[in-house]
Length: 266
Image (cartoon, rainbow, N blue to C red; front, side, top):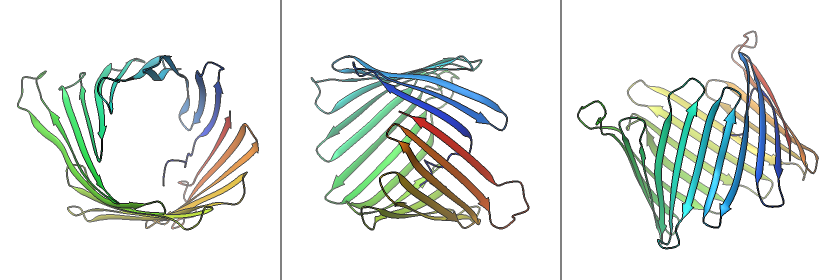
């Protein structure tokens, strides 16, 4: 519900070569400066995919690669690394395994802790249940291992309707969502999040309507009276404009209103 709302000024150029290499150039104008990245995605070998080879204007390098091993059916091995830009380096090794109705995700962050993460989901017909756990081994600090996060999820999913309940932040926050595809052009969704300890609550409802093959409207409003809207307009087959706006309906005189624009080429 929140992924396509973007309140900076952004230009994005996407190009794909005949060999399948996808190159993305992004430039972002933010209130406190500018940023930009150059990203490549390609497959040097049949079972190896470079999902992200990226450099930013701040000198930060990122790489993400995965290996699909034919010897272990359903397994994908993933490596991620970052360095440069005046920040600490980071690295992560992960594996995804999908077999029948079960999916297992496991990873180790080698740049801190190390931190171990694991998640398991099980699907049966239209129902899904799952759990995740994050453990800081504290080996680098010679400390005692501790569980940093432990959560669960349960949901029901069909082609035109889904509803999920999950916990976040070590069971301190609970989140309930639903999505309904009313017809091929119109979708509605809602999200309710509550922190029982602090009493904080946030309800968000929204929707999307596809006017035609070139124009899409999106909108949402939450219980804090923040109203947001998107207009996605295809100008040409390879040119798309996205206009985003957010208004604080409780206080029109405030300077908290936002406006963003994206130009996507390719």
